[in-house]
Length: 458
Image 1: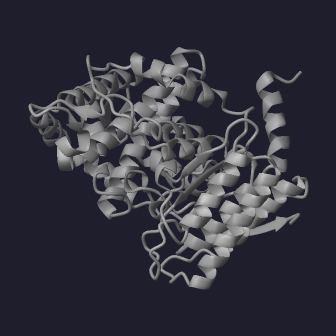
Image 2: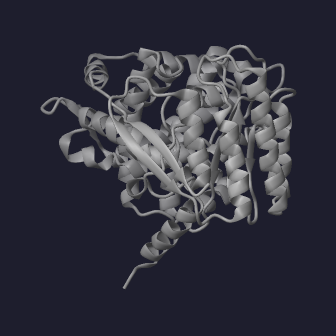
């Protein structure tokens, strides 16, 4: 007899066969805009969309046509192609209108207009459908495309699925409960500014396709050109890409260089997805205004160059602690805790390596070294001299993370600039043991396959 989880998985596989065209459109856009340089293998991607309803086909086909008119990296975007992309998106809006998705139709109309005129503004470059709508969309600028001043030059589409990842719905609907569970300082101040686009990204990751291990619908969005700098990164985030194009060729290998042999298997593909899906939704948790003698001011204004390292470290820690809270509430299995903690340690080294090589924004260096050194200082991780790798004490690591996040949140609430500087100054040096592991991770040869796309049913 099948378990409830198996029944849900079967149901999701059937749904994904029907609603996979949006992923194909995103795949085509990613290949055209971002390209793949240096990869030495190929992976054939075939998507069958014959079962889609006529209106759905018309909407998604229009978005694929728009993608084909987007510029490649560094290419001048001609007026003809920009106009063609605009018209295609507007046809997608018309198809959405006919399907009864008025919100989506209005959003696509604004996106089509914004390609060659004013930015979207309050829509924040992201739209998440409600009710029966299955689309999640993120639109954004491509900073390295020359020849045009268009504010929006990329569009990414994903699909919701209501039968999978129910923990994610639980988490989003109860984020205030999670926030109260954290060691928050008293009387901290907030503001209304929230980057809704980050929620759309997390939603795309969780529900933008089937489980990576059982699907070939792959996408690689060029995040550095698509989203705002605080979310920009050159790696793969979309759910179907986590396993094939990031975890298997890079992160899994890095875990083998970072962790002792008996803990390497804990750094799983599932944990990588968990880590990034929740961390995107934590930027606005906790204090958003710092107390100063002159009154409350935004954190970025108060902390200056120290702001980004602290915010990145906060997101990394809260993205992990969110799953500790979900486990405590019976929404995830307890085994996930060790996997998530192992992934945080692994990804701290990967992010640090990327920052040092120029493949990630510079603030990731102090953010990652802060987490690693602080947790090492409190015995959450220790260097095993026999295996020449790092060993995790899971209980101590949980405790260290709660202590560190309490420190960061209190610094934010009080606006204590001296305390922030002291925290970073004393925990961001790269000692010989960290350096040894970094050298091992940097020496990895990462070869990612080149996707070859075909779509049936259009």
